[in-house]
Length: 77
Image (cartoon, rainbow, N blue to C red; front, side, top):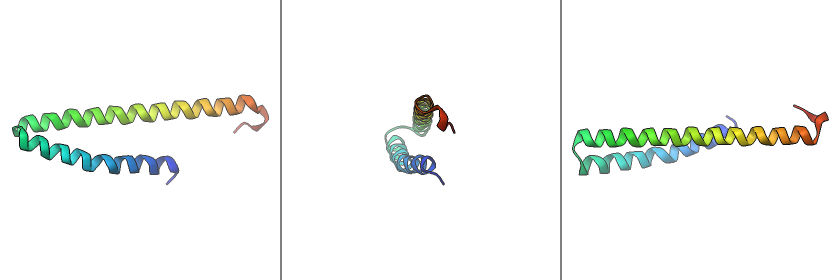
């Protein structure tokens, strides 16, 4: 397991209890159908957030590797 996998696992491990708390609060204050729709939209938002963060990280890593390759063309990967 590399560093990136560990970071993603740690962020997921933090989000799961938070989602469960939101789920039970939503179910206690809303009807079951409203609670389920609220949770589904919340999970959809979290998914979009993590996908956006992963794509930003990948862009930054690509830019860094491009800068390294331009600065030292003899040391390409």
